[in-house]
Image (cartoon, rainbow, N blue to C red; front, side):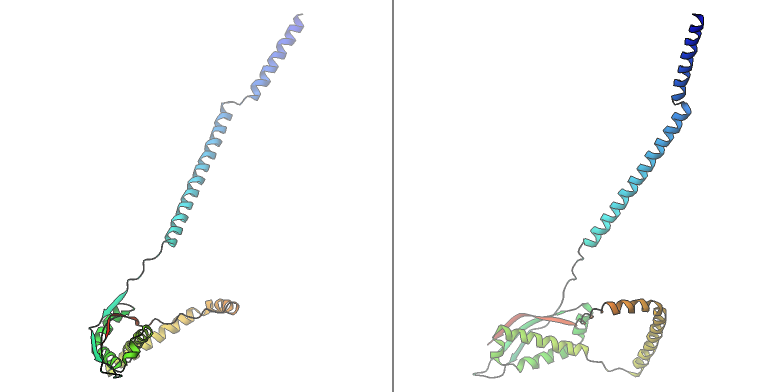
Length: 224
C-alpha cells in the first residue's frame, strides 16, 4: 500500500510538472505582447498612409476637374458712323454704332493706336454699300465680317522701320537663331523616339492662329 501511494504521488507530480510546462510563462507573455503591439503599430501606419494617399489623390482629381475661369472678353467701342449710301431709288444714309471684340488688351491698344486709319477704311467701305445690301440680316453679317477683315489687315500690315530698329531686329534674330540651334542639339537625342511615335500616329494639325479682331457687334443700325 505504501508503494502504491508513492507511485500515485509521483504520478500526480509528473502530471503537474507537464501541465505547468505547457502554460506560457512571463517571458512568453511579454514576447507575445510585443508581437501584438508591433502588428497593431504596423496596421495603424499602413492605414494612415492609405488614408493620406487617398486624400491626396482626391484633392488632385478635384483640382483637375475644377473648370478654369473663362477669359473675360475685351471690347473696343467705336464712335458712331454716319455715311451716305449708294443711291438706288432715292438718297439714303446709314447711322451705325459698333464695337470690336478683340483677342486681348494688347490688340485693343493697337486698334486705338491705328484708330484714324480704322475709321477711314470703315467709312469708305460703308459708303460703298447699297441700302438693299444692308436691310437683311445676312447683309449685316457680311458687313460685320468685312469690317473684321479690314481692321485685321490694318493691324497686320508691316510698319516702316528705321535703320536702328532694323539692326536691333537683326541682332535679336541672330540670338534667337543661336538659341534655336542649341535647343535643337539638346533635343536631338529625344527626337528619335518622337519620330518613331510620329510614324505610328500622324501628328494632329496645329490650330489656326487667332486673329486680333474676333468679331463686330453692332450697337445701332439705322438706314434712312
